[in-house]
Length: 320
View 1 (cartoon, one colour):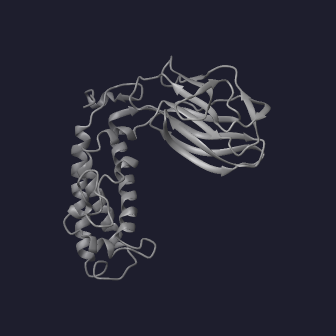
View 2: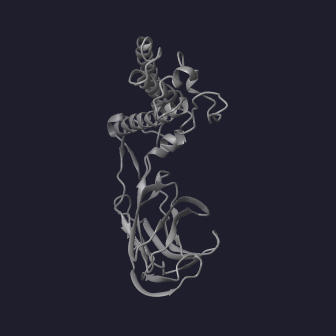
View 3: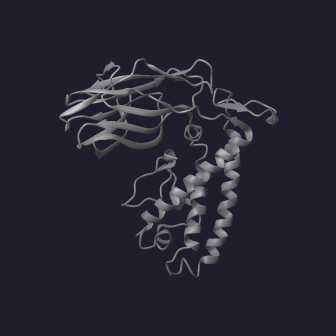
């Protein structure tokens, strides 16, 4: 859950940045940079390394717990099947010192949770050269990977959802002498029938030298991609992150006390103060539970293509 990252900081220090929320782990009782630092092992190095591990576990904990609550209140509808943009390799053309690929998009807007998910991308190369694969949302770079091709098909796993319903997947042909043609016949590659009856994923080939100035057609110059429409339930949390701030702060506290209890460092904070750490983990767990319940009861959703309120709840939820 990337939106939680940096939202609460470890503490004010010359080596740390200000948090996005103005809240810090050291705001909690019994927590200081000194005792965080004391729990660091050789790999973590200092309190910064400890906080990085604590932050990852706390993000995972709160995300899982919120989704469990949502599933108890709503029917969270599944994503649609994955579609391949397809096409057949034809001849070859000289490289053009441009980026080439496929534009995948959908007009389906029956839910604010709809996102495009890229499973894998396949690039057919005529030469073994270094290239970079890019994924753009409009003019914004969302993802990239540089690799050296082999002659033939090169499969790149992406397995990531993007906060976009219109993306461009392209590679840079600058170092190639020749590139293939890959043409598909039509721009529609499937209907998302599991969510609705009339929403389609569309595709078209694209080439460009400068981002934002695109030339469209039916030739992707060797790119195929597996893309699906998905319901991004994590975006509910990100849209209401301020409501979950206190619960997240105490989730960080719980994970920090676990770090202290199971640290392999030997010092006062991990030996003599173990009882205090155990007391704090119980206190923080209770506070985390209370703040999380309050936040969950505050956040509400309306029925749409991704969410259906369970009849047993007795009422409908509306977005705040």
